[in-house]
Image (cartoon, rainbow, N blue to C red):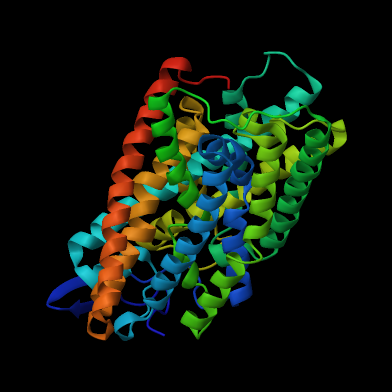
Length: 440
């Protein structure tokens, strides 16, 4: 094991004449089973985001494009993540951060660029989680009071405060443990509720319209944007950080966790996405529980479950930022120590506060899913993964394998540019329709 903890000296290593300083970590590593890592990954893909894919993916793509697209995204995401997992111990060193791995393979510039891409990715994912949590609270409110007294930005503020409390209370990713079980139960509640009530609505409803809405031009942009949402659905953008928590043998254990994520873990997502679209057609909303009809108590329970699950999920995707800040400022000792507690209150509270402000100002969830997929998920998970593997394993690859990886790099680079353009256009259009701090 190369990394010992925050109290040891920073490591400096050289690869092809490039010197990079790699800080120790203030967080725990090598303490979790592959099963726990699998649940972390599964929590990510079955988070409350899953309630938006019927509207964000299936409506723009239709039955054929949506089904084929989701299955294809599952396969290519598994493949790309396995490539990254296999590089965790590249060069005889354990790379516990995505930027550490990129820096070792390419050098200091790639280290900084990967750092930027990853934190943009994670920040935007966290913006989405607070939006989702706010939407879940608003949906609960509307069940009992259909008035304008409480607007979405107010619920987003409440969600942000709750996320800040949770962030202060849980010091690092490995400390989630029991909360992963809670998250799984919460996911089952809102997914099962959405599936059952959608099935009931679908059997009672007249024939639905499954045509792709919009003009020819708008359809082109929404289809491209939906492709970015497809890859967003299955990828964390922080696989090395999750793998860092896994006990040795880290590569084989992480691959087990990935197989768990992309087999058992994807079934709930498929169920809620396909059944939701079947039940409501192109009227499926960006938050499926807003479509369903059923007992008040059941809808309330599902919405509250989605709210709390979003709080837990945000902590997972914010943990690389917390790890960076805790390590940089030398957090040591007990998590309950007054200095450490005050640090988390100030620093994590500020981070969640900024995230909450952006969420309330621009509550266009589907657009942000597309933009996140375009500008960070495509580069991190597909372009970088294939090219890093190509560089790292160049001596062991056949000409066909090299061509295959180069094809992936070029294809996903083109897709990233196209998807970013489409997502930005959607945000501009929606910004004209909905003002800042809109009540959506």
